[in-house]
Every structure is written in C-alpha cells, then in structure tokens.
Amino acid sequence: MTEDINVFNRSVVRLHRARAFGDWAEHAFLMEDVAERLSDRLDDVSRTFPLALDLGGKLGPAVKGRGGIETLISSDLSANFAPSLVCDEEALPFKDETFDL
Image 1: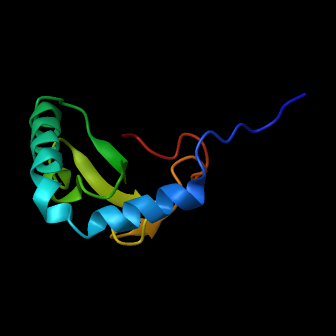
Image 2: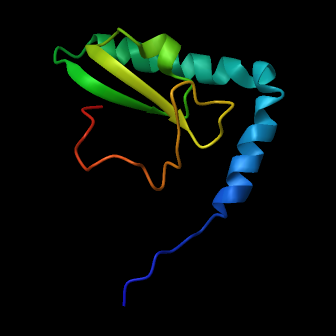
Image 3: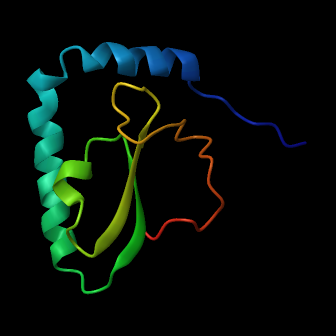
C-alpha cells in the first residue's frame, strides 16, 4: 500500500509565505547572505550548469550568470516570491533529471 504522506497543509504553507512577503525587507539580509555564499562556492566550480532551479525564488539575483549557470528558473509556492514560476516544491511540474543544479 503506497499512500502519499502530506505532513504540511500546502494551502496553509502558501498563506504563510504570502504573509511573510509583507515584511520580507526586514529579513532579506539572511537570504542575501546565503545567496552570496552560494554564489562564491559556485564560482569555484569549473563545470557549467545549463539549467538551474531556484526553489524559493530569492537566490536568482545573486547566482544568475555566476558559477556556470546558463539558465535559471526561479520558483516558489507563493506568487509574491516567484518571479518566474509558481509551483509547489513538493510537486514540481518537471520531469526527473530536468535540472543540472
């Protein structure tokens, strides 16, 4: 018997993300720091990543065009955070092995 386990109510998570967007500027420095650190590490990697996915939609400005990333798709569960694509990270609308990073 295989049954999908739903630990979090996805509608509630989406509402929480939308509400968090209201005071995002107060906390953005944390994500900006993480994005910058990730970008620095990607700059040390010699391979290229033709297609990368940014789950959460906030790493894009820091990593786009760096570390061999050719195309970056930014996505989030909340439309407020998703500059490119609104989708649930637990049910991505992509085939397996679509992304390189």
